[in-house]
Image (tube, rainbow, N blue to C red; front, top):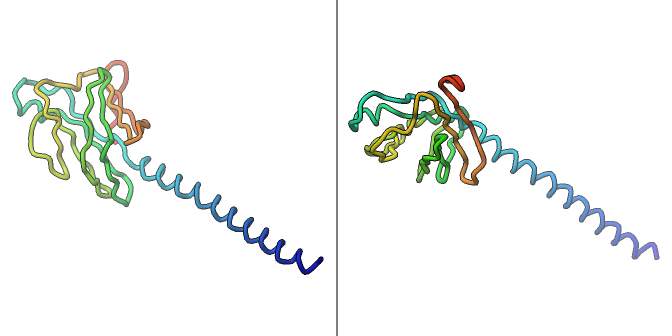
Length: 153
């Protein structure tokens, strides 16, 4: 009887060890995803530019910064104002320790500047910019004007 218990005990020990290793790996992966998204923040904001022409619209922007060392894919991330205007990032990999300005007007997208293609101003003197990840989770929020203050990072 002791000969048949030894293989069973060995099997139980191997299965238990595998379960512990698997359980330890899951939180580490989830933590890494959260850590990378927490490094993406709203930086400076240039709001309520004077004028109605395309140059004025392109002087209005919100900066999205990657404060971490590793690049982050922003595909599916969104930037919204308090009125519900929304910009969705297409394919854009934001390098570590770099930023991209999201301009209101029209232009040619680069790795430093992207354009919403709008014909009117979005960001008011009192507004809130909210950045969400590709799953809709709030990553960062920046409020300015009388109801809040602008705090450039």
